Length: 352
Image (cartoon, rainbow, N blue to C red; front, top):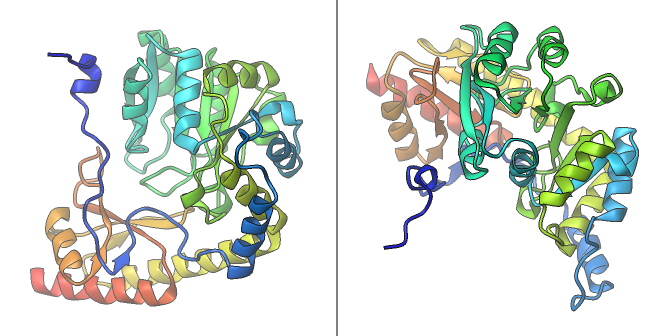
C-alpha cells in the first residue's frame, strides 16, 4: 500500500460540508461585484488569447499592486490565493525546520506548515489575545525556528497585534517574520512601510476579503527583492490565471468602491457588536476585521447547531486554545446580520 508522509496522514482534509440560507462562516464579503464590473472583466478576458498561458509573473498586476502599496514591482509576487503565498514562503525558507505560530491563530496555518515539510511550534497568545513577543523570541531560540508566521489582525480573535509587539519580534528575530494582513483594510496597521527597516519582514495580502474576490483566488507577497526572488522560485509557473489577473486589475481600479464597502462592513460590525453586547450571557470581543468572535455560557457546538437549525451558519472555533465556548460570525448584509441576531437570541432562550 502506498502511504503518504506521516505528517500528511495525520491531517484532516479541509471540508465545510454544512449549508444554510445565511452563510456567515467563511469571512467572505457580503457584497458581490456589480454587474457592470463583471461585464468589464469578461470583456477584458474576451480580448485575451485563451490558448496562451497567462503572464508567468503577473507583470501588469505586480505593477498595479506596487503602485497600491508604494513599492517596486520587484518587491511583489502574486499567488493563487494567500494560502499558496504562505506555503511558498515556508518552502523557500523553512522546509525541514520549525515554524513559530500563534495559538489561537489562522486555522490552516499549521496544516500549511506540515504540508510544506516544516514543524509547527505554537506560542500561546496572552489571555487578552495580545501577542506575547518575549515568548515568541524564546521559542525561536529554543527550537531553532526558521520562520515566524503571524496574522494581524488575527483570525479568529479579531484583534490586531500592538505595533510595539510586532516590532519587538522583528527586532529580536534573525529569521523571516511573515505578517499576514488579510484583514488590514478593516482596521489594521500595515507593516509594508517598515520593509525598509526590516529586510526579513514578509507581508501577505489577499483579494478575498475587502476586495470581494474570494472566488478569483488571488494573494500576494510584499517583501524585499531578494525574498520575493526566493519565494518566486517555489511557485508553479502561470499560477495566477487570466481571469484572476483581470479581475484583480479591475478591482484595483475601483478603490473608491472598495473603500465604500469596507466602511459599510465596519459600520455593520459595530452595530452587530452592540447588539451582541445587549444579549444576556453573550460576550463579543473587540474586532478590527470583517467578523466578530463571541462567547456564550454554553458549549459552542450546542449554540452552533441551534443557529444552523434556524438557517444561520457560523463557525465553531472553540477547539482552539483560549476559545472555549466561542463562535465566530462573519459580518454579512444588514438583513443577514439581523437574521443571525434573531436566531442567536432564540438559541440562547432555548438553552436557558
